[in-house]
Amino acid sequence: SQLTATKAGRHTVREKGTYLILRELHRCEREPHVLAACEKVVQVLIGDEPGPGLENLLEVEIPEEVERQLQRLDREEEEEEEEAWREQEAQGSTPCPEEASR
Image 1 (spheres, one colour):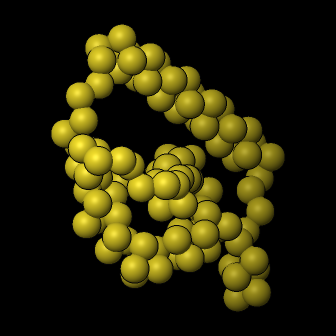
Image 2 (cartoon, helix red, strand yellow; image 1 turned 45 degrees about the horizontal axis):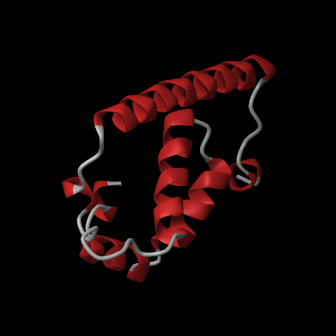
C-alpha cells in the first residue's frame, strides 16, 4: 500500500495491471492479513483520485480523534479476520482451483 501513497505511485501501479494480479491472488489467498491488504490496495486503485493537496497521502494531516477511531476500526477488523481465519482452518480450507487441478 506504500506504493499507492503518491499520485505517481498509484499511476504506476494501475499502469502495470496490478488490479488483475490482486484479483487472482484474492481468489486463492487464505491468509487474512494478505486478503485485507489486497482489498485495501484494490479500493485505492478503483477509487477516484484524491483532490488537490492530497497527491501524497502520507503527508495528509489526520485529526487525532479521527486517527484514534481509525486505529480502533483497524483493530476490530484484524480481530474479525483472525476469527474468520480460525473458523476456516477449523473447517478445513478449500484449495485454490488452480491448486486442485495440479
